[in-house]
Image 1 (tube, rainbow, N blue to C red):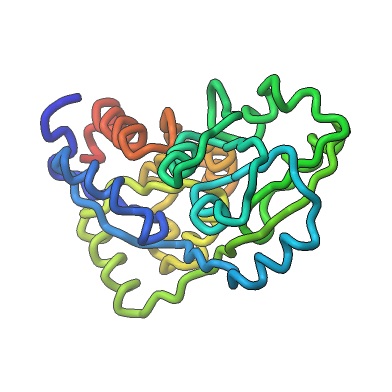
Image 2 (image 1 turned 180 degrees about the horizontal axis):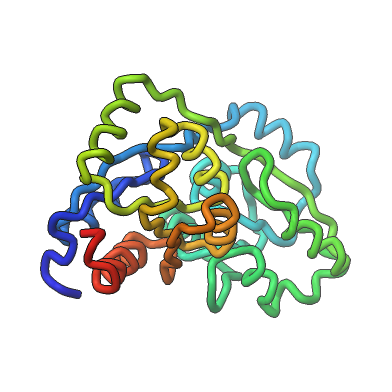
Length: 258
């Protein structure tokens, strides 16, 4: 990695504020400027409500955590079941909570890659509990049900659209107009949708020409559908170093963004 490879590069970081620090530090370590613009607010479900939900669920054979938010707000409600995770950040959160990950994708970091794992192939007769936020993709549950599992959800948080004041929005637009925002990072389809909802109209139009870096192929697809002339870049993973690696590579291929 080149020393200070992001000197003069401004990056809009859209992660929830509590989860943005690692990526911000990684960008700034390489000389870039990170502008925090959280497009998701993570709100935990009341612990008593979660506890009441658990009493109505069966005893699981496998607990699947779909995100580190699921671990943060739901690990205390799990018992001795095997633990499955979607990706490395979720696995790290489980380890930090003092638990052991039993099932994780050998490659990739999404539902499709987790479902490819051998331990989730023969689940007939097993009970699987998916710990997640309210709503979300159904692919995991639908596939496991098709394989004969009994699948239940435990919702431990919800994602909300943040309220952003007019002054903050004006600052983002001013920085963008001044050429100080050169790259946008987006972690999920919902984050992209919220970003489009929250940004001023002029900034939304800039998503057609401002490179977008994401670890998710689904975000690439969504971005190209909404902004056909855009240049979304796929990062090799969800970690801060993965995202920064993609941003640095982008500067090498398109120096005009720096």
